[in-house]
Image 1 (cartoon, rainbow, N blue to C red):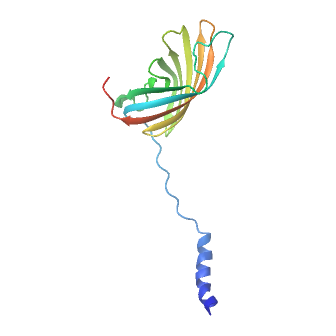
Image 2: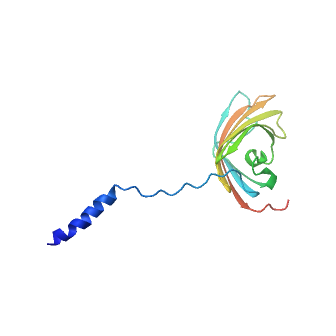
Image 3: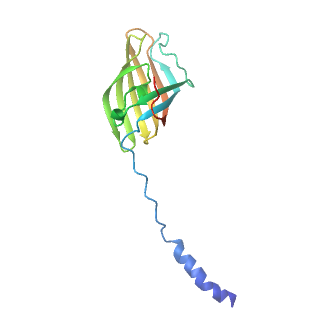
Length: 164
């Protein structure tokens, strides 16, 4: 008798097993970063010397470089290159793409004390208040000491811009 009472329950369970559950809508992709103070960390993954000279950028694998950059309201859709390359370099975009959470840019940078350029590529994903990127730098110096440096670059918005 108990078995007969269980048949409707088993039938209902069998029917609901194959039914698709409604899927949550994916979060909309960010079109821009949020203005404010951003804390970034670049962690060197690898450094490859390109010639016989002593590397002019001495950042072996494992080196961490922290920086803090203010992103103004005018820069949210095309951030100042300092956000990605660091505040000590002077950079210009040669290619730039930023849309729906995907970022890809190429930059030509100069660094005080280096006679030549740093060809920099940055690509990865972002939200309004964070990003995770790959940063590749190839030096093109007038002297020996050229290197390729690959880093993992992360950033997060920490609040409104600080003075100074």
